[in-house]
Image (cartoon, rainbow, N blue to C red; front, side, top):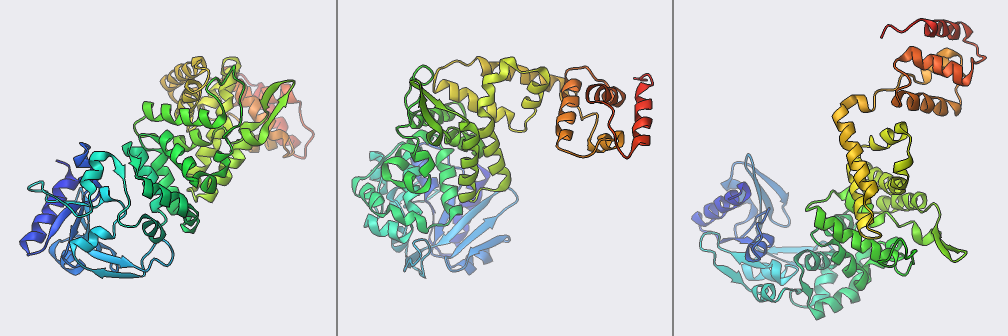
Length: 464
């Protein structure tokens, strides 16, 4: 038994000992009935929030208006919500009126029947007031009551319905599906952060390909991710992509990603989703051949825009963008200079990039040679440790000291020095100075004395 479940049982027992009703509720009940082990446990009760707070030594009042208290222990936490009814959803997300009530009222204000099941954790008895258990058996996602009203109350439920259907491999009940399609424009009333969180859950779920299909079929994809929707019908060269258009390819990649990774990172999932987002705007036919010139660069710009629109944290956004920008580089792997290869494999996201390339190949031509080569070379570099990519021997200050005037050429010079260093041609700073002077010439600068001094030092034999 997990720490969260132990704490949840303790909470229920304490509430009942003080004369209150208390049950497990929601996802933990649903998952347990489906034979899945829940990660989180929620409790519903008729005890008011102040009573819940008074019964336990460490609590956090999450929302006084909604009667939600988090009970915390050293290694677990459980959310405890007072039975309530809600009305007046003026912003299609938050109720303007909340009243504490009965378990029957509590069940009616929830989103889907499969999430409105209450369980006695000690006897296992299920309290089902909305037909949720039957829908579980029939593998249906059904809105409680009138579906259109449920989505008008809280438009985020539109995405939640798709996510539950995809991750649980359920079908959305026809009237609920019709209501989703009818009210889909309301999703634009929801904050970018809330939308992002649901998309993240959907694309890191066990069936992200199905989630993408449902987004598309419902019309929500065109509203939230029009750049991805544009992939539909974007043809690709059949000799490299026998699977079909860019949308089909991306959907297959999401499928392979989930099959190979039980919990892929957010950055990897969205890099897979967006890696070819630059193909539709760059597609052209030349002499009967389909080309997508610079689609990686265009795609990186689009990925950056999408991640900003969805309010991704900066570090996460940068990782997604960089993986999209670099995803075509694997084609050049066998012909890379040793220095270029080492630098490429030193990227902080390289393991995810290799997985991105692998599922890219699996979802198209099936040739995994470059993915295998990258993994093999990365293992070698890991074995070498810090020596695989040592600190640069020179920096911009050293070039200035040599007499060079700061300019865009600095980047070229320092890159050339590091290449020679990574290829084993330079061992120390003296080697690097000699290399610069021999390759780029002795500069004319105001700091001639410093340049001469460093040049003289470079002529001395190395002590290493």
